[in-house]
Amino acid sequence: MKGNIFAEIKNDIRSIIMPMLNMEIPLAVTETIEALWTDNLRPQIHAKKKTANSYTFTIALPAGISFKDFYSKQDYFKDAAGGNKVQADISQSGKMVILEIDTDMLGDYFKYDNNYPLKGVLPIPIGYSKRGLEVVDLTSLPHMLIGGTTGGGKSNAIHVVVNSLLNLSIAPMVVLVDLKMSEYSYLENRVVLVTNSNTACEALDRLVAEMRKRQLLLKQSGFVNIAKYNAKCKVKLHYIVLVIDELAELTEYHITNHKFGLPGDNVITINDEFINNVREELKNA
Image (cartoon, rainbow, N blue to C red; front, side):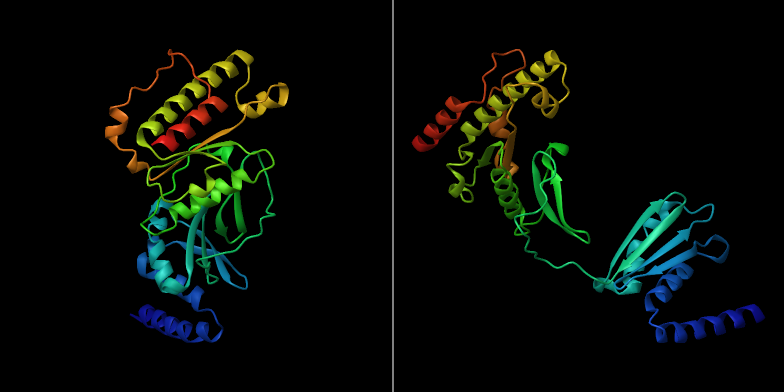
């Protein structure tokens, strides 16, 4: 009983003193840990670091508490520390857990300079983080899915990606499938713009054939990717980027009713003749 009284007095003093010292967030984290775990099975704060806009806590987990279990409580820490006015992130560093509470929230829109660092072969800006503008090399993630709700900015992201690629000193060939026929007409002379479902299936067929041809070429040449091939060979392989806006528009009907070429079929190269044929079909569609 005496121990409980002392614990209550300690908590009361802590709840008064810590806010006076502008330590509301450490208090919130401590109280959340105490509320979620019992005394004999409670994570312990080993260290905390304060910056102008954030707190970082280094926390040790006792035997019986997994990182997955602690991570699942992330929303509790976020709500206690400030709700939608803070960002809570939990990561793992060896046996320790790192909990970061950040009060400097990212905005909804950012302007960025076109002179961002062009690192890699096909660099594209993908968004903002605490580090600033995030730029990735598309060759390091050759398959990318942009998801989101209606009006969430998926097509805007595609505009950024495509125009960033086209503005490179050595731009790749961009095949852009837009079955909605509403977004990309201004790029018609800069990309292979496909707005017809049948032509889209043919384009996919040709791209698969070109991919098989390149796979065979790389195998026979002893190279594992285009970058290493281009570094050693005089005749360079241009990068090809396929972009499909609204993949759902390319329905199962279109796929199942089109006979795609198999690896053993005659290979048709994506070249100027193919591009001109696609554009002629689009004009006549």
